Length: 329
Ligand code: TYM
Image (cartoon, rainbow, N blue to C red; front, side, top):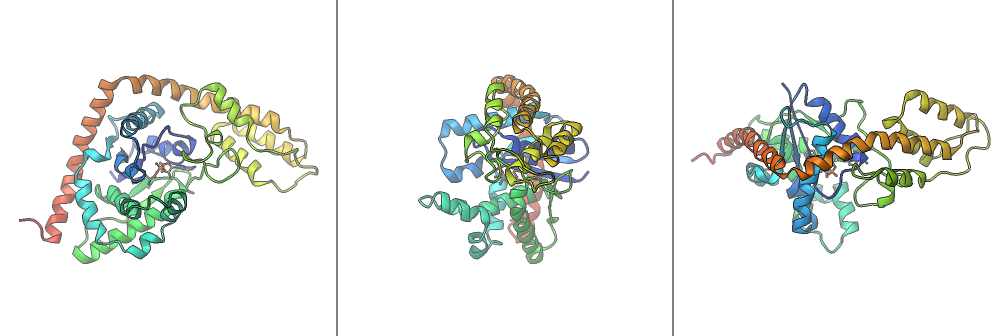
């Protein structure tokens, strides 16, 4: 079986971007691939989170993944920091990464803009740790959203440099999505991608209650509609159609498309439909996640079992690395 790795940072509740960019693929891939999915707790330390909140977030991410359909019996589901071999390999991969390329990374530049007072070295080497997460299991496929594309390219570069210097060990991993193109779920305000840190009212969380979902969708940006048939569609309306494509029936979407093209679309009706389809999609996951989140004994067992399995794979890689680098005393 081919090896798959992907991770999610525990920085709060998961949103639809996480689901349709990543988790939806996890659920499908767990059937046919050798999967390692993890909560990237080390990664979230770059922003110095509150200790209690971090622990809570880790459990929530686990619970929400399982509620969405991830089966810890099929896929290895673990917490990054329970696999110390990752930290060891991270040291080696740091020697394969250059300051200039790290400073040019889009996510780094964005963080520097957002938090100029906290440009720590962990932030700079974030792509190195992410590359390590992937190659520690010698993965071939990495299901992620479009925002992670550059990190995957860097991963291939680091892996290649290691291979050239010390000998072939790491395959070159590819970003993966079942729909072919990597997904970017738009935010409800039409301003970029859905994300945890941006406008909360423009982000739909898997934990939002039904009324909150309706409220957020109804507030999504629209206008008074096209005045003539077959007008060009503004970005924020395209975004609504894209969100619909994730949760609504094809025939429903087609109806609103026809209405748009006929210049008689009612955005209020469209948003009502989208809100109800979102509620139908999110509420069973939310209910299930709550139950799992409260079952601490079960989650503890998931974490322990995940660590055990992930470490078998990570140790095998680390042994090879030590041998190749010449540290096998
Ligand atoms: P993170 O925690 O920001 O997001 C987790 C996953 O959700 C995807 N995603 C989206 N996809 C589509 N549209 C959106 N609006 C959207 N928002 C988030 C992300 O692409 C990601 O797949 N660096 C990673 C975590 C990570 C990782 C790894 C991933 C650490 N090590 C190794 C893969 C492999 C991150 O910050 O994801």
